Length: 111
Length: 120
Image 1: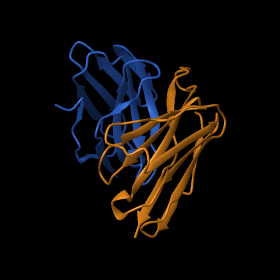
Image 2: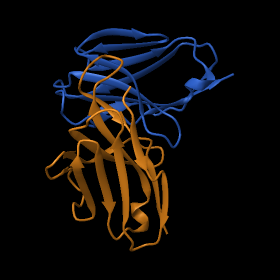
Image 3: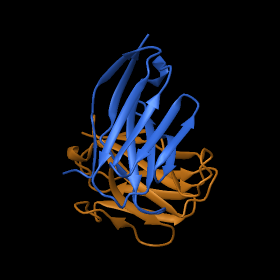
């Protein structure tokens, strides 16, 4: 079993839709959870950063962490064509531990 | 957020040659830098972790004599792919740990734009 699992997609939605992206993980020691967006042939860009369980909102993005279920989500409201990218969940145990990435979900927002 | 640059952005070389990739943290000091490689449609695979002034720690399966990492200062780390072969062709990405402008956390990883290496 991989440490972090994520549906690779591709996921295609119409502009304005609400997008839900999810990851599951197996190691209960993970405490720091992140979502990165990666455009084609570019480095990942940090979108959301969460410590432990709970929700966090930033503009159109909401991150949720449920440690009891080992499940994290990223919601994108009012999706835009510019949101089309690969979304990577990532997590680690301690502040300076190595980050483990999910395989990424490819998202296309159709105008 | 913090800025990390990489140079070159793209390099094509002949088999058997060595290639050096530079990673710089432009507006923060990165005591720890990471090097990843990414194959098409796959996630980032950590190759090694480097701390300024000390030897890099390599992940299992990564040849330290082939992928030489130097982290001589708080703003510069280099990855040298020695005697490159076509199977080394990949997208190499570095990251440094700095302070997040989003969360204020002092342990956020910021990524460079990546270097695409093609070995002929």
